[in-house]
Structure formats: C-alpha cells, structure tokens
Length: 306
Image 1: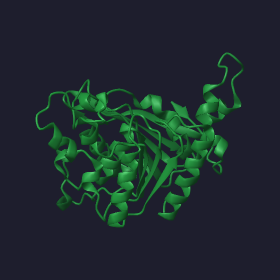
Image 2: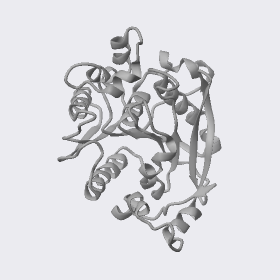
Image 3: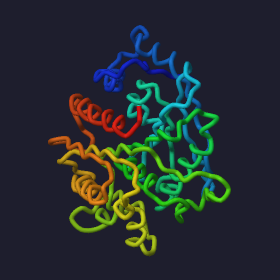
Image 4: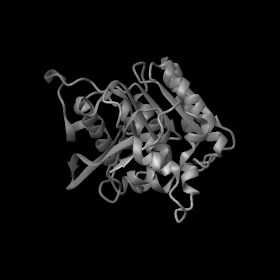
C-alpha cells in the first residue's frame, strides 16, 4: 500500500490539502492530486511495536520512495480525549510533514476501552523507544525527531518527550542505558492545544468527562494525574516546544497553553505559544491553519530541524 504528497517547497495551500481532498467528488474522474498522492510515498501499515494487557499496539511508517537517507521524522499521536479515535483518521494532520519530505510514524495506543490511565502514556513511550531502536532500518534521523498531536495527542506528545529516561511508565518496554541504548530526547514538540495539567480537568470548573473517564475508579487518581501532567516535568533540559492553542477553546482550556509557556520560560526552555484568536478546539479557519504552520516551520528550523 502506498501514498504520496508532493515534497516540493511547502505552500499554504498544500498545507490544507486535507480540506481540498475532503471536498472532491469521488464519483468523478480520478483527481490528479490523488494520483500524485499514490506515487510519491510508501506506507508500511500496522507495524506491531508492543503488547500490553492482551492488546497489540501498532503504528504506520510513511517514507519517501526516492530518499533512502535518514530524514527528520515526525511522530504523530492522535487525539480523542484518551477515550476514542484511531490513527487512520488522523492522516490529514501530518500531510504538511510529508510535503516537506519527512518520514512519519503514526501511532496508535490503548484507549479507555482497553486500559485506564496510564496505559496511553506507557504505549506512546514504548512507541518512541521503538523508533529509536529501529532508526537504522527505517532511516529515522534520531537527532531530528519531532513529536506532535492534537488535544490528547498534544498531551501525549508532551509527556512522552518530557518523562525522564526509564521512568516507571517505561516498564512495559524497559531499557538500560548501561547496554548502550541512548536516552530518548526528541528534538522538539509541536503541541496542538494539548492538556498540560490533568488534575485541572478532573474536578472543579474545568472538569471534563473524558478526563474523568480515563481514570475510572482508579485509586490515588489525583496523584497519578499529577504524574501524567507535562507541567510536572518542566525543567531546563526539556526539548523545545511550540504550542498552538485557541483562546476560546471549550475542550482544553487556553490556560493550559499559557501555563506551559510560563513554566518553560522560567526554566529557560526554548518555546513559543501561538494563540489562535477566537479559536475553539481545533475548529480553525484555513487561514488560521496556514498562520500556525508559518510559525511552526521557522521554530523548527531555528532549533536545527529542516
């Protein structure tokens, strides 16, 4: 199975290819855009990277057919409040990176139907370790690994990048640096309106049903929520972070992006908060998406990723 998107110089219009594709009349003659998509990229689907609780977790690897050299690699983690969603439904979110000629790893993880917290975090940490372990085979440039995701995927991108090497959430795919396995430190995180303080969503004015459902009736819920909050792990050694967040977000409060920026600033971590004025939870206009990527690319390039 193979797919493609042009790897020519990125343009705002192609950044929004998913909007165009969704409007195509599939009963009409095959679109040249779809033919191009089918010619440029290979995709290896459903590569098993771990097994936990009887569930085999999988990922897809996208790579350009005409480049066998290591390239920047974006790790995409889908959203859905840790309770729904699937990797196959998130393809349009990482088309801009394919357009740049990057490799892409599209990750699935256990949701609440298969595992309460911290299952999703355990899985994405294992997925990241799989990427480092298999970098030579798939030509991932481990000096240019970028984690990204929307909403819960933003949270998982942040926490996966920030957790210390061999934290207790790594126990399902434990590694020992003494045996030569490098510490996993992504080059950057592109955080699209991700949760940064999980406790904030469990009770009070910002309580959200998806957060409550993720923990179910677990004991010591508040303590675990703190351990799963990116804000808990902010320190001077964090990877650079760019956050895109609407200031009218009704699902993940805008304050989560603001507080993350303040904490990163205090520690001297390179970061940026791009505020989408009037933006709700990802319901941005075409121009707002374009504007966001016009902030993302320079931020990544300034941190040595291009």
